[in-house]
Length: 437
Image 1 (tube, rainbow, N blue to C red):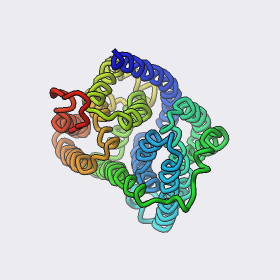
Image 2 (cartoon, rainbow, N blue to C red):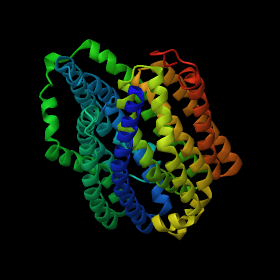
Image 3 (cartoon, helix red, strand yellow):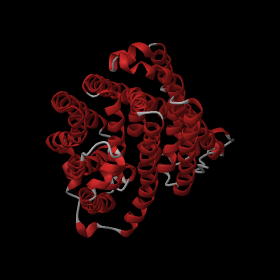
Image 4 (cartoon, one colour):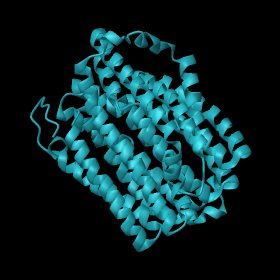
C-alpha cells in the first residue's frame, strides 16, 4: 500500500513538472519559430547549413569546458544535499575542475581560430573573429551550467524553468536585432550571446544557491570526488563531443555531394525536431536523472521507466502524429516556401525521434549508476552506425537517406538497451533487489 501511494505521488510530481516544463518549452518554441523565420528571410538554407556546423562545434566546446560532469553534480547534490561535509567536497572539486578546463579550452579555441574556421565553414567563409568570441562566451556557459546543476540536484525546477523563460525572451529580442542587422554573422553571434544573457539572469535571481557556492574551498578538493566525477566526465564527453563532430562531417558530406541548400534543409528539419523534442528531453533531464540517482532497486527503476512511458509517451506520440499531418503548414510557418523540400524528411525524422525519447529514458540509468563501460560501448556502436548508415543512405536515397539513417541508428540503440536492461525491465525480480543489469 505504501509503495502504491509513493508511486502515485511520484507520478503526480512528474505531471506537475511536465506542466511547468511545457510552458518553458512553449516559450522556447515560439522563440525558435521567430529566429527560424528570420533566418529563412535574411539568410536562406545555405547559411542555415553553416549555422548548424557552428552550433555543433559549440556543443563540443561547451562539453569540454564543463568536462561533462554536470550530470555528476546533479547526481551527487541530490544524494548528499543533507550531508554538508561531503557535499562541500563534490562542489569544490567540480568547481576547480571546471575552472581549469575553461581556461585551457578557451585559450585553445582562441589560438586555433583559423583552423577551426576552416573545419566549420570549409574554405567558403572566414569568421575567425567570431570563433574567438566562442572563447569569451565559454566561461559564462560553464558557470551557468555549474549553478544550474546544483539547482537541479536540489530539485529547484521552478527556478531553473523561470530563468530559462526570461533568458529565452531576452535572447529572442537579441536574435531579431542581430539577424536583421548583420545576417549570418548576427545569427552566429546571437548563439553565443544567449549564454551570457542566461548567466546574468542567473546571477541576479538565483540567490538561493549562494549558500551552496559558499561551500567551495580549494582545501576541499577531494581525490575520491574526483574519481566519482571522472566516470561522468568519460560518459558525457564521449557522446557530447563525438556526436556533434560526426554531425559536422555528415553535413559537410551533404554540402560536397548534394549541395549547401540540401544541407540547409536537413538543418531546418533538425531545428523543427529540436523544438518538439524539447518537451520530452528537458523533462527527462530535469526529472529522470535525480530520480534514478535516488532509487536503489530494480523494481523502482522499472516503475519509473514505465511510469514515464505511460504518462508522457502517449501525449508525445499524439503530438508527433499531429506534427506529421501539419508538416506543410509548419514548414511554411517557421521558414518559407523555399524550404518545402523539408516536408519530405518528416516521416523518418519523427519515427527516429519517437524511438530516441524511449531510448533516452533508459539510457539515463547509465549516468545515474555510473555504468561507464556499458555507456561508452553502446554509444560507440550508436555513433558508428549513425555515421556509416548516413553516408550509405545518402548515396542511395539522397537527402532523405540521412533521416532514414537517424531512424535506423536509434532503433538499433533502443534494442541494445532493452537487451542490457532486460532483467530489470521484464524479468522476475526478488523483493528489494538492487540489480540493475
